[in-house]
Each structure stands twice: as C-alpha cells, then as structure tokens.
Length: 396
Picture 1: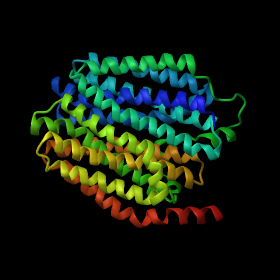
Picture 2: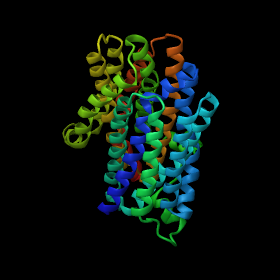
Picture 3: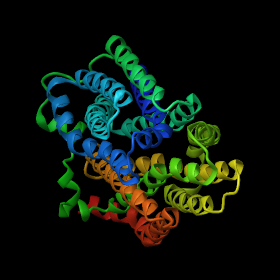
Picture 4: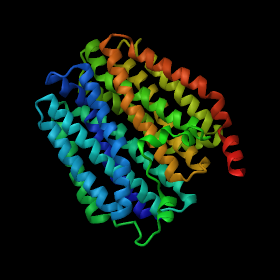
C-alpha cells in the first residue's frame, strides 16, 4: 500500500468535506434570509447531490482518459468558485445556480480520488484504502458544521469554505502526483474502477445482486439523515430560537464523541459483533435519536439526541463500505460506484421529503424514523443472507 499517497488523498478529501460541512449550519438560514421557502431550501440541499449523481460518471471517464490529478484540480477550483458565488448571491436563482455548480465540481473530485485509491492499491488493499477515504469524509463532515456554526455569520462560512477549497487545490497541485499509468487497456481500467451511470442502479442485474441489501442500507441511512440535516436548523430556530452558533456547538459535541468511535473503536466492534449487527444497531440508533428529538426540552437534550443519531449514522457508512468491499464479486470499483449512486439518491430524496413534511407540519422526524425502522425490519433477514448469497454466486 502506497501510504504517502493515501495520506495526501486522505487530507484532500478531509479538507473537501470540511469545507462542505462548514456551510451546513448556515445554508438554510442564508437562503431563508433572502426569502427562500422551506421547499426551496430543500431543493437547494437536493440539487447538489443530483448534480453529483449525473456528472460523476462523466468526470470519472474523463479521469480515465486524462488522468486523476487534472480532474481533482478542476473539481477543487470549480468548487471554490461556486462556494464564493453562493456567498455573494442575493437572489434564490443565483443560489440555485451556485449550488448546482458546486455539485458538478465536487463530482469531479470524489470519484477521481476513489479511482486514485484503486490505482495505488492492490485488490486486497483496496477495501482498507476505501475505508480510509470514508473516514476522511466522515471526519470533515462532522468537524465542518461545528466550525461553520461557531463562526456566527450566514455568509462568511461560504467564503471560508471557498478559500479552503482553493488552498486544497494548491496543496494537491504541488504535492499530489499523477497515479494513472499510461497505456493501460480498457479491461485493466475496468478492473481498477468502473463508472456507474444513474440508470445502472435500475438495471435488473444490479437489483438482483446479492449486495442489494447493502445498497439499500446506504440509501435509507443517508435518506433519513439528509432529511434531518435539511430540517434541523429550522427545527431548533422555531422551537428554541437557536441559530447557527448553537448548532455548531451541538455538532462539536457530537464530533468529539463520534470521531474517536469511528477512528479507534469501530474496527474492534466489527471484529467482535460483525458488520451485520453493527449496521442494524446503527439504523436503530439513527431512528431512535430522531424520535427523541421531538421530546427535547433543552440545549443539552437536543445535543444528546442529535449525537445518538450521529453515532448511528456514522456506524453505518464505513461498516457498510467495508462489507461491500469484502463481499463483492463484480469488482470493488463497480460495487462502490453503485453504492455511491444509492447514497446520492438518498441525499436527493431525503431533503425533499423532509422539507415537504416540515412545511406541512407533519412531524418529519417521526416519518423519517418510521421509514428507517420499516427498512431495518425488511432488511433484517436479507442482511443475514448476504454472505451466503455471495458465496453461492461466486461458485456458479
């Protein structure tokens, strides 16, 4: 395993997700300040992932042709410009354009980094490398909202995030070497990474895959948390008159608990209890935290229940990614690509449903938690069968 290159990639993804996370506590408030409705805010949250889903395969194929580093640099520079544009926007249409541009640009970074990992690792090392990238994304995503919230300004975090993306561009430009070897055949490229188009997840061969339960875990866990993420700033403002600063402190506390758990304890828990049990526990904790939010009566109780949800969510993704990488028979690149498509679908649909329910005062957290519990019950037996089903498929 090429540890120096993986460290550079870890830092690149960490800073990208840190910048993404910094704007989370402020996006809803900033859009609301210029007159956006709850539904329009939900669209802003969803369109980012929608652009990622559409453009990631295109950028990925371009990285196969022109190299990983150029696409990473283009994505970082474009993301910086989009974030600054969002901070300067004073009308909803410009917010929508800037948010779409950020999704398109980030779609060049994330898949190119994952392809880079595939380039510099062997098949046996790839699961560990992908898990390391997942940890970088999770760490940046947790710490970012804490930093953005404490800033206490609705527009400044967008400029800070844009500057961070620009600094990451310079960092990658100077230090990150190209990983793609010239002269590889198309078969060799496909063995390293496969770019999955949006319609691929609907193809019969994919839906019949023994890994489908794990893809559905990725969808439902992201779907519910994205719905919470969209409504939480409005929820705490309406109920307690809290703003981005208080939300930042909540995420700071959550991060102080979740990061050590994900970084040191999770691997031991997986070895002791197995991936299936950890995923089921994560799904139920995610649902429990959302229901408890409706009983919150103070800052400390809000923080506690948000942390329960965050622990559940952060238990799922690295565990699920690791399990997929161990069990796949279709190639790790293809499997991770399909999983990313399901994650994107969750991030698209979750905010839309959460925003619609919130606008209708229809208890979004109860509905989202209910969907998560039903999904957990439906996946209970299929998850047990994943290992056996993959084993039978490999023998055919």
